[in-house]
Length: 225
Image: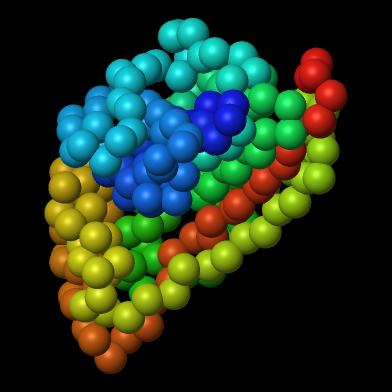
């Protein structure tokens, strides 16, 4: 997040890549606050001029009217009380502040993904929903932001396409390895998981994952949301 007079906030900062970019973009002269329930990957941020806070977005207080810019990426879909968190993040905006939310959503693409990779992805999506995530929530973000009284609402979705053997392919390969037992428990045969991993290693193959929905809006310049 970024506070008034150049203050940014990055809730659910995860690995911290966006928070580090914010530090390079707004410091000195501004303030960058990265928050996460587990901030272990953010230890270098203070050396870049940023701040780190361990925070539960549902249970802990979030300062209202304090931030010029608030951003989340692949955080809210995993939180059962995600709608409450969106409202809290909107209230954290200073007048004129901007909220940017980036979240995954199947948007029908999930059902069309071919091969073993698609079969494993669908099982993985089911596992996330069993754990409380939603693969169909982000598509409603523009409506939700308008209902909260934000203005200049915009939204778009993009489908990530990548080649086998690429960094994104390696990321998914590692994900399937880590989730192997969970996937088998959901009925995915081990040989299907192995086939999906082989597809991810095939540099002649192009793959795609479910879309990312990006929605952004601004708090009205007049105080009071």
